Length: 132
Image: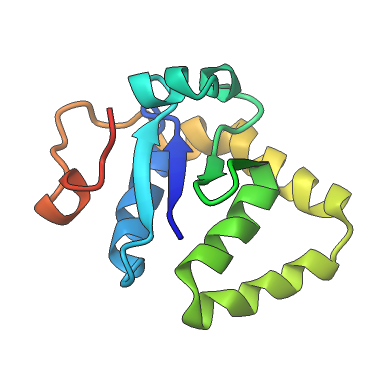
């Protein structure tokens, strides 16, 4: 099964997260696309790009399901498998708590991590999985 992780291409935290996910995904189940790109436009997901609300969107290819905010993090744990599935225990927390934590980080991510470095080139492993 494949997943596409849509991320804010202008966010430093998002760029770092994508690099981390690419290296943690040993089974090569994840592909990546900026929310500002063509792939997001084709799937009508560009509307989720927001500096204040957070912008990670996970799209599951098998059934076309879309996961937003904290649910996207949970789906990524499922996609990575192995050790990462342990974090699915967070689903026992009330969704409102998970969403509050996600939104707190989203509101502060640019201040804490800055904007993505437009000149940073992805490594070869990531470049092969990066969609337009």
